Image (cartoon, rainbow over all chains, first blue to last red):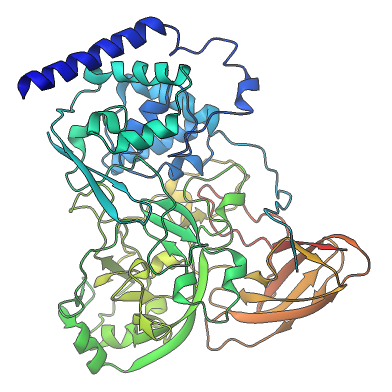
Amino acid sequence: MKIKVLIILSGIIIITLLACETEPSSVPLTEEENTPDTLAVPEVNEATGLVMDETFPLIIAHCTSCHSAKLITQNRATRDGWASMIDWMQATQGLWKFDDHEPQILDYLAKYYGPTESGRRENLAVEEWYEL
Amino acid sequence: MFFNFFTSSPKGEKLKIAKTPFLINDYQLIFPFFSYIYSMKKKQLNRRGFMQRAALTTFGTAIGMPIVFGRYLPENLIPVILEKDFPIEGKHPDLVLLNDRPVNAETPPHLLNDSITPADKFFIRNNGLPPENVNPETWTLTIDGESAKSTRSFSLAALKTEFKEYTYQLVLECGGNGRAEFNPPAKGNQWTTGAVGCAAWTGIRLADVLQAVGIKDDAVYIGYYGKDTHLSGDKNKQPISRGCPIAKALEPETLIAWSMNGEDIPLHNGYPLRLVVGGWPASCSGKWLERISIRNRIHDGPKMGGQAYRVPCEAVAPGTKVADEEMCIIESMPVKSLITYPKTGAILNARQLNINGHAWAGDLKVKRVDYSIDFGQTWQTAQLSPPANRLAWQDFSATIRFPEPGYYEVWARATDEKGKAQPMILPGWNPKGYLNNACHRIAVRVK
């Protein structure tokens, strides 16, 4: 039994190392990818509705352990706004400290879930026209 | 540390997936998994398939990553990993789920067409998790507090036999209904128009129960306590405990209710017992009610202080930061209306259209409802019914004639008995996005 587990674990480690070696640049974004153009069609994770990028796993780990991803995807805030929400959760809701992950998490939230200028009233959006 | 890993099956029941023997307590330990996932992404593997397959294997691969600081997770907490719009038991499938932990769901306007909102179409605004395994036989309500002359507990059966029963149609509207429109945006559930309903509530007058226990002269406020649990799982934390001034508590329509539309109250709406404080932010109407304190000061439970359910005492420019001490508690909700027929997006072959909806005005009556089909340039008066009782919403209806083919918006604007009307653009911005009573609009195309 122990041997089996050892074999499986070593297998995972080898695959992981290979993956790291063959895709050394898969994690950091290049400057080009960081331009606003790529924001037009951000890749969305179907299970959560969250935008997929290199910070996505951190969001899953730090945020959706406790609450729905909808609380992120339905809200819009500046970097400071998101920081104050996290402060509030840490101060009153039992959320742990993010330590050195915090800047990356805030960058992600401000980038994909930042406010848009909607004026004093937006145009009506009709999901579906139907014959009455 | 061992985890029980759960996820939702398509039918909504919790499905136990696996009990994992993985020791997960350090993010760095399993960090290489991230690279593994991203290498799979680069190789064009179907990530969705990966997630689904993974969910059926062990914890480590189930989410492809550890739960960071998972050691802090309370044992009874189910990690939210795979989101699903699962239907809520007893609720209409077209309710819009804004959040599933805690459950927050709103009703599209066209589903609110009934004069008395059916239970399955009544919105849900939970702050925590509803109690499990509720037993009405053993449920008790305790009245206590600095300004109570004694402390008494009542069983549900005692409440039903010792006090006179009343039924009122009462509007409950979330203070944050309409928040989604504010600019700059306000945090919280992004309600559009559907955090409102008017059901027929049956129970006893809060006043009768408080008076039976005895109210001291220095009573200022009542505060409720419910049996819901905090999201963190911490049993010492309450998700919410609000209330209202003693004068509102003693109004004849303020009820301790056990029935909605002649049936048990749905679990998510407070079964087996709740307060119903009509016309005020629905957060005053405590659910899963187990205790009411008569306070000699403004109640100080969670979500009474800070910025919760408060607006700036003096109006501020959009985006202003307002100090806590300059925020005032919301009391009566403002005048508002909703067009509940037809559903927005109607294409008409005829030039005529019957519309209907409801209007309400917090503690006040609605005096008039007008509608416009020319973007507010001219207004016509709709027919308005009187309320079934004080604090019930009022039905309105009109027959519209469109002069020519084209795109129209039908706007509805209610005016309360003191002459205040709904604004056509957003009303006063406030940091938490409360009290948006801007007029409701639907789009119509005439062929």
